Length: 286
Image (tube, rainbow, N blue to C red):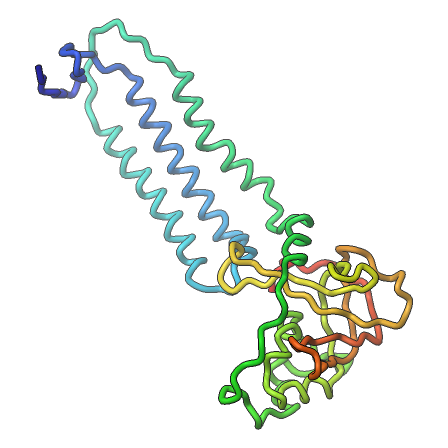
């Protein structure tokens, strides 16, 4: 036999046919849900205002604004729901149902504690284990582009300009990812890069295929931290090899060499000088 389930302001109807009086449990549950919205929204605004969100992005773009919009939207939703809840009149309801706070608090804790703990404890960086796993799984540099897309009128002066000019020491500072992808460029670009003294910074790791050799590596992201991929460049250094330390940061100064006979082509950095440096603020993405 089907029974129609109806509700009133003070009662909840059940499929059993009886009407159960509402207690203050529903109200507290709503308040806890509103509290969750407030905390989530405040956390999104924190990541935006503190600029922590930029540690997870390739560049300033729409994601940062979306973080702000999401935070404001969650807090507005919480305020609207709180207004409805406070504006609703309550009348005393007779009944013997007892409200149990523990289940509501447990749900609240499950939704909030891990979220807040991760926010407070997050170092805004990948772990060393994640970094090494990415480096060891890194593919070869991208193959040579089709000839019709290759530039033949590229000059040394243009490369220097694109890299931000010469630094105080008279070197051209190139991103490790640019050096990594250099083999995919036109012969004119390669020749320009090989004619310059280059400065490159990265994290030292043993070559996965030859533990006696070293590479400088970084994680490159094209959108956000979820698509981070390792790029690494082998370093040929004839000086004191004891300077190298696994997972330490180094600045190398030297020249780039690309062996056109090797397939796939790969850039090798011929280091003349190696200097330990502090890890950058956004330490492993570029």
